[in-house]
Image (cartoon, rainbow, N blue to C red; front, side, top):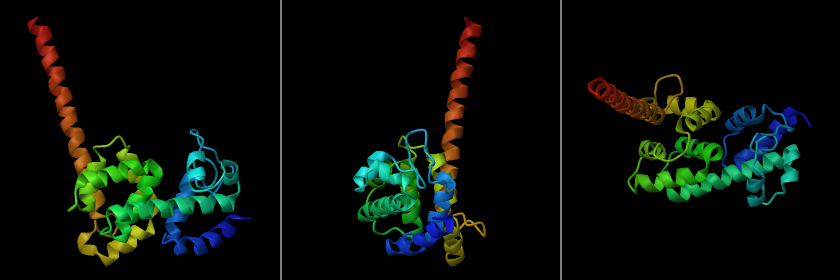
Length: 208
């Protein structure tokens, strides 16, 4: 089968699971560049770079992941499972924010995201969840870049519909901007603390 045949399959399968078709295309492009023989350094397999343990969790054998359609089926099933798990914890999320957290979970681990939702509290916003996520061991900058890349057109469409809550015509959500600013502030604070300690040591050495 060709890439176009796989895309046609996704065009039918993804909507039935409530998943955005174009985002799945972008995700596979990012994960494997549509190479069904791709294998990651940590053991990820095939088009959607699925871990063997994840395949078993979804009812597939790892060797089946080398078959493109089964790999896609497994990946979509896993995304739908993640989406459902997040919805149970935060059923007030917009579709855009739900899919952002879904793709972050796919890339960085759902445990971190569910913990962030819990830590953010019952009256949380997506901004609070993203802020709480920065306090976990997840690579926040990497998973945000990943989610922005695969959300693609979905972010642009949302920005047009909710211009008052967007970052302009570039498809950047307010949640992403706020999270990036918070991350930058944290890095600056950490850098200043390190600088202060270094200056203290230099001062001590001079006085000694």
